[in-house]
Length: 127
Image 1 (spheres, rainbow, N blue to C red):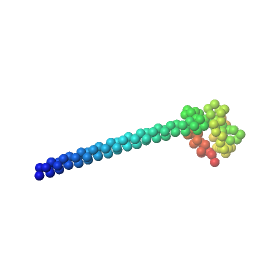
Image 2: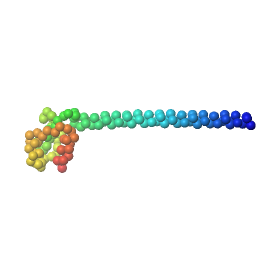
Image 3: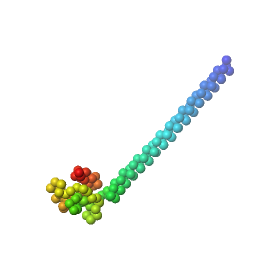
Image 4: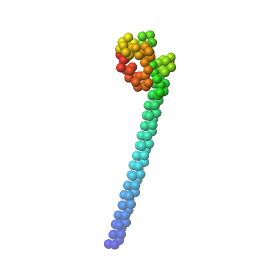
């Protein structure tokens, strides 16, 4: 009887060791997976942020602090860069179709300070 109880005790210890090893293995595997997922998420966020920054600078090669001027060009609104000589974008917005106060500002050179405001204006008055 004593032989069997020692054998069962050794078997029990072996099972406990096997379960402990399996638990450690699965824990380490899950930990590596989570670290890899976090690293990939960081890389994706970094690349998205870089793409957003590139998108702002790629659109007409605009720097963040650049000022734009809306001016009349042959009866249409044209967007000029801050030097008021380089055309940034042509539009199909007819100056005569604009409200009087906006038309007057465009005749004088309407200043717009951000790309977002520029495209907001163009979106509002485009047909």
